[in-house]
Every structure is written in C-alpha cells, then in structure tokens.
Image (cartoon, rainbow, N blue to C red; front, side):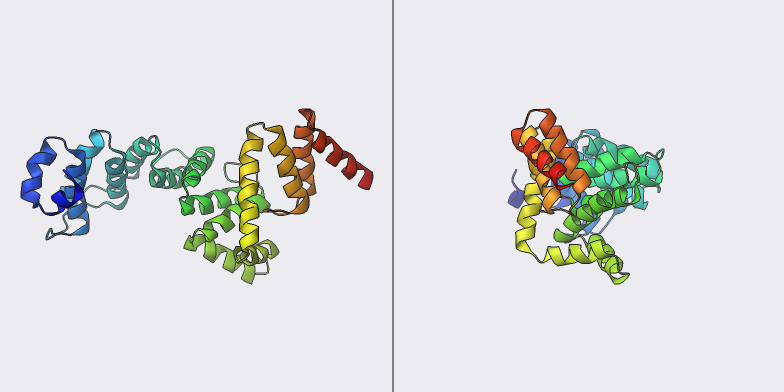
Length: 265
C-alpha cells in the first residue's frame, strides 16, 4: 500500500491492517493521533499504543517517537529512564535524533547514569548524518571539556558548523560570545559568510577523518591546514603533531615541512 492509498483511508479502515503488523500503516495511524491530521483528533494515549506496537517490532522511528512521549509525559507517564530505553534502541539503529536526545541525557545524567564520554560518542555519531544540533552539542563538549579533552578552538569550529547548518542555538551562542568580545566567535561569524572558507573547512574535515584513521597523506594535509589556518584556526602545535605522525610513517613532504619549521626556529 502506497502513501496516497493510505491517506485516503480512515483510521477505522487502517486499524485492522495495522493490527496485522504493517509498520507503515502503524506509523500512519500514530502520526494522525500525534498531529491531529486527516480528520483525526489528537490522542496521545492512542498514539502511544501504536508507537509501542511499532517499537516492539523494532522500527526505529516508532522507538524514537515513543521515547519522545516518555520524555514529555504525553499519553504515558513522564519517565526519562523509559525514554532513554527506547532512544537507545533507535540510536543503535543510527536514528540521528535519538542519538542527539540520548546524548543529552548522558551529558546531564537525567534518567541514565551520567556518562559524558558516551554523550560525546552519540553526538559525534549524529553529526555524521548532519543533525545540526549534534554539531552544537559536540562543540560545547569540546569547549567545556565535557567527556573529551578541552579544546576551545575545536569547540568553536563545531559550533560554527552547527550555525552553518542553521541551528539556532549555535547561532545564538556565537552571537552572544561575540558580543562579549570573544574573538574566535567574532571570527567564526565572519567566516560563515565566506563561501571559500566553507570549502576549505570541508577539505579540513575530510583530512581530519582520514588522518585519525592513520592515513599519512591526510595527516600531512591536516598539518598544513593547521599551519596555515585553512578551514580551521591556525595552530602551530597541532600542525607539528600531525606532521610528525605523517613523517613517522615515511611521508617525505611531512619530513620537509618539519625541517622547514625547525629551521624557522
């Protein structure tokens, strides 16, 4: 049954199909009850019933939305631990918003034992799929040293990328920090308007990922980015660290770059 066919059917017509285990129809009914659409009145308890049915069948969207209901106390008792349980199931299937919300619970210890390192892991996983709030949350973790080694420059870069994606919290954070005279935030706001810098940042992130996986050429390129401030904040110490990693794998360009830096001293 396709989308157009489902939209033409009433809840009463859809119900037996959903009871038989059709996940698309289950989610259709749940959506109508949560949003109050297609002539259906909002009914959080009915929505919870159908979302639970889909969630227990392993559907990540149903698991995510059931977690949302428990987090808000809509149609079910307010229960952050129960929300975390369903978000965990969805997050394990790479549902990006569950990864974000679950990460926020681990960051604060709300409904789960506090585990800031796990929060960072979840935010990073969600950022891979461009959940922009995850960029902001990950940036704050770097900036504050929550669950990861404190690195304000890296934090501002992640927050900046969240702002590039339109995340209002990231935009507000940069604006507030800039108004207080924080120069990296002021510079980040200027760079957001620079299309050329965005392309350099994309290259930087690509090099960064490959470098962390051990690619010597990417390590060299990342070192050069840090050395020149291409797509990132200029940082000589980080440049040297990545150039050394590359040189240790025999990269001649990295060795030459290190020699030049040593000569400059």
